[in-house]
Structure formats: structure tokens, C-alpha cells
Image (cartoon, rainbow, N blue to C red; front, side, top):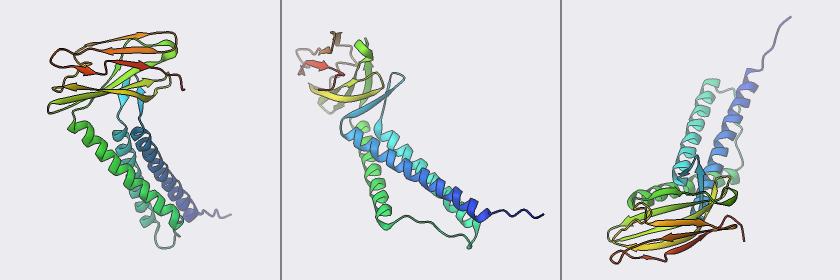
Amino acid sequence: MRVVTDEPHFGQLVESRLGRAADFCVLLAFFVFVAGWGGLVFVVSGQVVRGWAVSIVLLAVSLVLVIIRAAKRRRSGPGTTKQGRSGLGTWALRLMVLVAGAGGLLGALGDLGFDATYQVLEPQGPGGCRAAVRETSFLMSGGGEVFAVSAVGIGWRMSDWTADDGYRPIAAGSYTLQWRSDSGILVIGGSATDPVWPAIHEVSCQLR
């Protein structure tokens, strides 16, 4: 009795799954990019995850998978058939790679160039709602953004502020956060020489 193996078919199956995994990473990178530029943040274990870093990592993983797939295809020999996607699908993925890659680089430049810092504030609000902030400074100006973060770790931009002389009120501890039954009030303090405006920001995890 002779056992017949279908190695070319198995190889094509592996290549197909590697290709799908690479495409999925590209889709995730594009989603994270769109979400980040749309004002969403992600908090894991009390830390804000920078969207641009996630996008770049996902694109790098996709590239590694594509390289592995190409190496397996070369080892399979000329007898294997290539299962490509439609031209429209190829161009759509290329566009996503371009947009997510460029967006990730711009996000990194924005954070690094403005020396951005992220912080999840205490105390925690009702239903697990949290307040998170992003502070930046450049030359003689500073600013920040306030995010409301739900219990599942997804947050969205609520408001922003500006400050003189690159002042960072959150880093300086010049703020108070008080919660009511349905929302919180973040009051950011400045000084006579380094005012912050606006000083009062609402934080609510209830979609309106």
C-alpha cells in the first residue's frame, strides 16, 4: 500500500494562511491609524498605548509574514501555482500600507517632536471610567488633550487646553479630578506667569 501526500497543496495552504495573516495585520494597522487620528486612545494596564507605535509594529509583522511566505514559495519550486488576489484588492492593501505607514511616522514625529507624554489620572470614576491626558510642549507654548476612557480601555478625546512657556500642569501635579454620578470634572491649574485655558474640562464615558 502506497501513501500519497499532497505536499504542493499543503504548501499552498500554508502560503495562503500566511498571506491572510499579513493582510489582517495591515487591516489592523490601518484601523489603529484611523482610530488614533479620529481621537481614540487605548489604555492597557493603566498605560496609554500609542497608536502610531501599534501601527508600525503591525506593519512590521505583516512584512515579516510576507517575507516568510515568499521564502516558502521559492523553496516549493516552480511547480507550485501562485494564488494572487484581485488587482483591486492588491491596490487597496497597498494604499492601506501607505496610509498607515505614513500616518504612523507622522504620529511618531508629532509625539517625539512635541515631547508628548501620556498619563492616566487618579481616581477612577463610576463604572470604571478614567481620565487620561496627553501633554505637549514646543518652544514657548504648551498644550494638552483630555480623554475619557471606558472600562474596556477605549477612550476618546473630550477637550484640549493651551499653556504658556511650555508649562505642563499635569506633570507638575497642578490639577484636581472630582467625579459625580455620571461624569467627572478636571480642573487644571496654572499660575500668573503660566496660565492654562480653558481650566475646566468635563470627563464623561457616556456616549451622547
